[in-house]
Image (cartoon, rainbow, N blue to C red):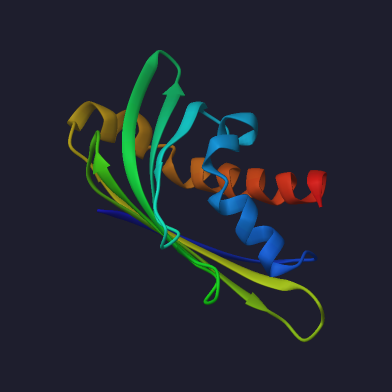
Length: 144
């Protein structure tokens, strides 16, 4: 299983950053390799079911995720419900800082079901996660 984590300190309010993270319908507008994103179901408790399609070169994969979010605790946890992963879990944690910035921590762990996907995408995993985190950072800078 591959694991990666990164922490950033961003000059934006934590609740605004939280809103960007949970706005899955907009992922297609700014996330690299995301070719489609759609929230299928929103629940009263803030959780949702979302479909994402990712493309890398000639490969296209669609997967469905369960997303649980806690606006009070500033946490978002995503797990795969259906798709190409044997295991997928990511977590965003936001923390207000005394200097007015927000600490943004992101952790992801995954394992593909397919040996081919593992070889093709696993090889660029760390770079892909850096690009994804940077895309969220840039999105915040563009709209906040």
